[in-house]
Image (cartoon, rainbow, N blue to C red; front, side):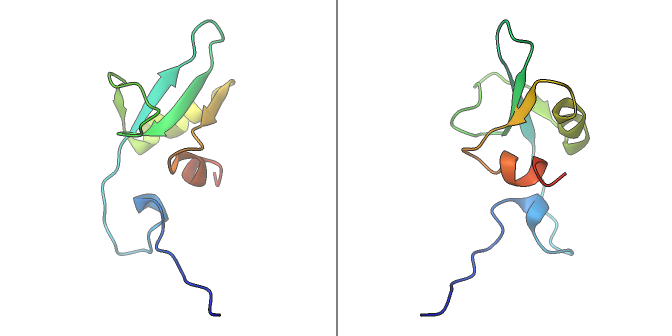
Length: 81
């Protein structure tokens, strides 16, 4: 049985030449100082979370205590950095 190829799960993983805009949001974990990065619109993201550009999200991800959500494509994108 042939293996079916799936399209990239996120616009930033799309092949070059395909232009798609995507935004990120951040969830602040109370008391710990940590954050979780989500795709904007992720079901686990806070509804009132700020919309971040890719540059802002990469900066936030580089801080101690930051991690990427495993429920949306955030982990696929940021864990590759």
